[in-house]
Image 1 (spheres, rainbow, N blue to C red):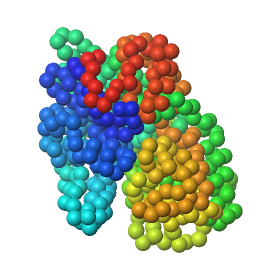
Image 2: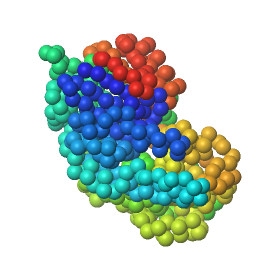
Image 3: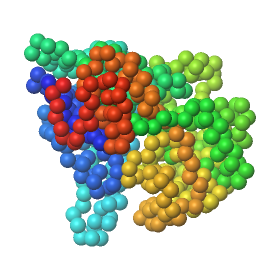
Image 4: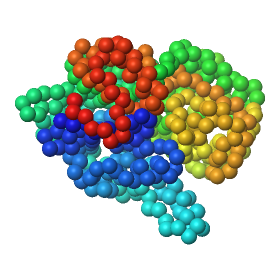
Length: 463
């Protein structure tokens, strides 16, 4: 048995790890690398293996940095099954179609410039037909249901509590008369967060592959969320301006709606309109309503009582392009929630383009911003940023609410490991910037977990 680490290694995007056992090759995640355009384009296009030689994919969840390069895998010759939870399969149906559209639009933009420069045009990373063919390869597996995915390899998904359908993957390997258990966290969620059930503690694993996104940070208390969100909403109410929130279509958008519904109901904010300006977010919210098996008891009770947090009176879903454009000329106060969460594409970029120079507006970040993204530049306090190739002065206020993160923080990660560590013999720390990964690895060693490694890209290990 061998583990080869190929993506989300010493960074947070492009999750991809290859398990080779009994002559079979099982890929854990196949995510898009996100960052500087040229580097991302080359890394996503150049798979570090023969795609036709992959026997199966095991997908932790639907976020694009974990699932977004699956259509490229199909385009390069992969024809095996993709194992995922039913909710993840449904989310991928909408998210990968949206990703294909963005790939096509991005290439069109780049090729206009290349044509002017006399250069050959690029092909898109993948197209809608690749997505549609890939979706036929999905094999949904419910939480707690053991599935044989290759010779001597079976998996069982358990709720990770990160986004709808996210899974911890318990991998059982039988090879040469011996057995071994690995646990792949994907992205690990947090206990006691709204909407989703808490992460399941999986015991008995000997090898752990864990994320480390917030490996050196502790999130503020959840009680801070309502107060801070109410504060910025009421500030734009008084200024009659706009609160612009970049948010991932899956997970973060629905969390925001949950809190805004509570604040509206408690009359802690003025009755301003809330616009979800993203066709993908609209479809993703509809998928949420179909998968009650992922919800916690409080959310289920609200839904059964006819009080959906995804349908309060002030909420408006915007799908038409002209209606989206009209928001930029409509006076406030208003809240605009739009994708993508790191401001690297989608309608949020247009809203920033039109509103970033107005000092009465507020741009609120509620999630992690990867290196070299527009969102990261804004969070870091850059006074000028480039949007659509133009320099913009950042005059709008930039605010953050870290307590909404769907990633476990350092203490939550260590608490999870503590509950399962009696059996652990080895751990690999991935999916985190180097400072975060190093801090978490040091804390894990201090906690008594043996043989903790931060792999490099392309490194292979025998657990």
